[in-house]
Length: 82
Image 1 (spheres, rainbow, N blue to C red):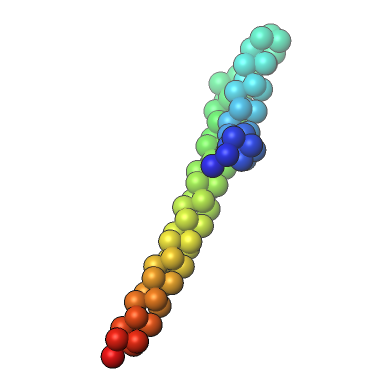
Image 2 (cartoon, helix red, strand yellow; image 1 turned 45 degrees about the vertical axis):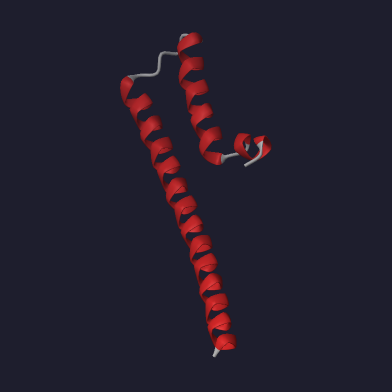
């Protein structure tokens, strides 16, 4: 994975945004209460987890296609040898 792709990851950007919002509010003296911080963290963790599942499903589908292609090549080789 190239550097541009890594830095454009929605999971990474969402995580960095939350860090900036929470740290920025503390530095600005806004003092988000604990319930607000918890709600923000839970929302982002849910988003990151869901994106992780989508990525895993995509990787699984790609692996399945490769396995099917390999199986097809094996079948052709076996047919040619017969």
